[in-house]
Amino acid sequence: MKTVILIGALGKMGQAALTGLGRHKVITAGRSGDVDHLVDITDEQSIEALYQKVGHFDSVVNTVGFCEYANFTEMTEAQWMTTVMSKMMGQINLVRIGQKYIADAGSFTLISGILNVKPIPYAIADATTSGAIDTFVKCVALEMPRSTRINVVNPTVLEEAWDVYGEMMPGFEPVPGKRVGKAFERSVDGFLTGEVIFVDA
Ligand SMILES: NC(=O)c1ccc[n+]([C@@H]2O[C@H](COP(=O)([O-])OP(=O)(O)OC[C@H]3O[C@@H](n4cnc5c(N)ncnc54)[C@H](OP(=O)(O)O)[C@@H]3O)[C@@H](O)[C@H]2O)c1
Image 1 (cartoon, rainbow, N blue to C red):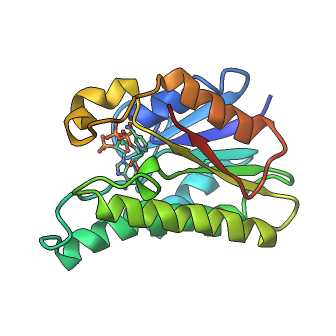
Image 2: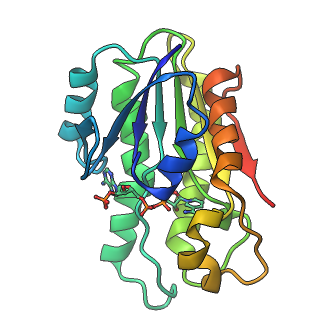
């Protein structure tokens, strides 16, 4: 049994990830609500405080990455920066700061999303930052200290989120959260590192 910090635990992707972590002691974290620890992934001090409060942990699973949605021609720099500071830098900072605290041979699992390989309108910031995270994981895996592994789950839309995103995504087939949970399980319990684990229908 590993100690896993699950960030974004109350969100739809967090609940999907949770289905794959049944064998472990899961410490939940998020920005609000009934979680073990509050954290804001856009705030370095908040991330540092989370790791210090938890103490020993073997794995970090992050499912947070807030994105703004708009046409490229209308998207403001502020909307770009909001997305970059959450989905890209927020996740990079979770790893940059967390690598000092994580147990030997631990693992990080990040979140991206299928829109960087299957683009749709309005999702340019999500697609761009998802692509950045996929690249970050593939490359930083080569530099991780103390046998730390790192992977990213790149899923298509969840069945549980189809009511929100379905209209934006004609021709896509949603997948059940439980299937995406298996991808998180492979990352945490397997031996993969530097992998983009795609879950598509
Ligand atoms: N849903 C899908 O089908 C799907 C598919 C592929 C990829 N993804 C990706 O998965 C990620 C999560 O999506 P989701 O559908 O799970 O969203 P969600 O249901 O809206 O959940 C997001 C969770 O993250 C928390 N959060 C937001 N900003 C935070 C911050 N700065 N620090 C800490 N926690 C924060 C939210 O807390 P509050 O309640 O306080 O806002 C909420 O609990 C996104 O990057 C999305 O692109 C989603």
